[in-house]
Amino acid sequence: MTKPKNYKKTLIACYLGFITQSISANFTPLLFLTFKNTYGISLEKIALIPFVFYLTQLLVDFAATKFADRIGYRICVTASQVLSALGLVLMAVLPDIMSVPFIGILIAVVLYAIGSGLIEVLVSPIVEACPFENKEGTMSLLHSFYCWGAVGVILGSTIFFAAFGVANWKILTVIWALVPLANTFNFITCPIERLLEDGESLPVRKLLGTPVFWLMILLMICSGASEATMTQWTSAFTEAALGVSKTIGDLAGPCLFAVFMGVARVAHGKMSEKIDLSKTMLICGVMCTVCYLTASLSPVPIIGLAGCALCGLTVGIMWPGTISLSSQKCPRGGTAMFAFLALAGDLGATVSPTLVGSLAEMTGGNLKTGLLAATAFPVMLVVLLVIIRRKVKAG
Image (tube, rainbow, N blue to C red):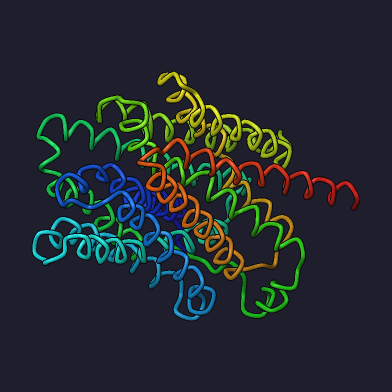
């Protein structure tokens, strides 16, 4: 008698995969001002860290459209955990042994960004291929673990820094590397299915020729930009622009942002069968715009903090929601579609935080100016959703 496959183990591995990606994306931004003070790195150069991180992910996303199916999900997703762990370990080592510390930081960032990119491309189709009911809800719950990972990273890091000092950040970096190292063994042993059999998915050329696919790509660019800008800059923004301490800034800024984003994704996961996805995303896009404007224009620090934190509630549904919409509109998109969507999200997440850092440097370190400019992305998201909803009504 054949033993039934334990897909819960697959789901747990994927949950930890997104937690690993969250560590990669959220831990280093907590150290931006530490890098500035310790190594004398300017804000303009520090803005290159998220740029390199998301650009590397973007390149991996593009390459994955070619090699992910050929090599196989298991080998690629296992490699993602190994590279993530290696990059984090080297982050603690390279800056002090290289003549230019910033180059050492970027090398480590590239390595764990490759791992993060593979996670982003593969985890969603791995879960989509599992025989779960309510795929939309499962997808949203899956992506909520990125948020809970962010909360854990920020809370854990804040407690560690308060107890042992920011000067010991390298020890904590190695501790965080243990998560992907342990999860490597989960992906080696859990059941993994193919999303579509050979010949069932659309050829890449036909996929790229589908108009609705390009609407989803633009939607994902705006989703990635809206989410990543706050993720990457909230810690520095709450410290520098709002004049609060690092501890309060990390807890009240990126930590609350991640909590609200996670709550939004869990709520969507529970209620996904009862709500209109595109309408909910449209409402969230409008609310996101309001949050960006509040954070960037309010002269009152506590109101600016509220804008940063509540933004998490508004962006939570955007990324997984776009994936679910794409699966509905392009059911034969296959792995290539997930890879292109990840690429689009990373493109938005590359451009927007870099824009914020560059504009802040040009205006004497004023991060509020950069955030105000980034408001363009949630505005564009609202416009795109209006177009999509009109197309649906038009049949």
